[in-house]
Image (tube, rainbow, N blue to C red; front, side, top):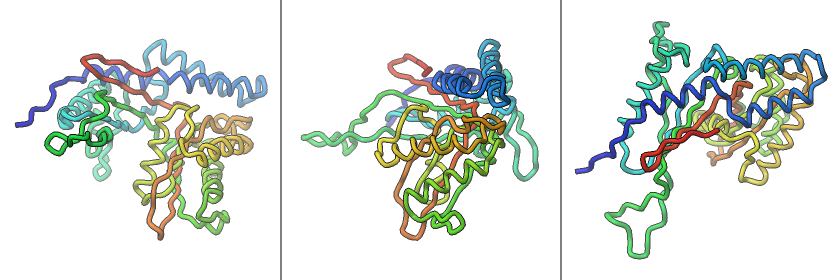
Length: 312
């Protein structure tokens, strides 16, 4: 009879939530500092970034949320063979409720039918938890035991993103071709709709933003792919050469739109653009754009051999 590995990560997930809510990743802070230097001194754009950076500093020092909207909690769990998904789910939910009690999170889970807030960020589909098994290794020469391949990675990893409502509301999805934008079913068409989405957002997404793009799939999987790109570091380029080039090109063009920090104009509208692609059926060509605000709250927890660590 199969017995799952026993592990209790509740307190560690609680710490993951605290870090995610109160301490932005170093690459995001560095990008915001560089953006401030690019803006005209004493301009509204530069002052907006000054206040943003001061807010980030105070949040970290006082272990308080970076933003009053602590957003939707999105967990991605990369789990080796042998761990119970039910146990990990229960531990994540317990940690999430505790983090809400400690005010690392604002109560944000509202019943869509009754309008009642659960008060602890736990509800139907809340928080979002997606599990991913590691890839299977090729079978050995002598075959695999019981028809099951060996797992390549024994590290259990939990990624967490806090996705604010303001930036979520300016996300977009396009179906190509788009005659209004003269966007065809190709990479050039993708670029046109991505720039349109950024322009339409204006300052409503709490710019400077980070843009995740999902190309292909269906309506649902396309947006999931777009949001998954937001877990990447800002300097992490796509492994697909054509998309890596498009990311660089779109970043430069987006920062000529003169929307700027919080919509005050200036030269920094976007901090990063990260793109992913998947297969689609011939009848559909969807492009999804997930907008993340400057409060790019993403963190990771790693567990292996009884040891827990966190990313920076």
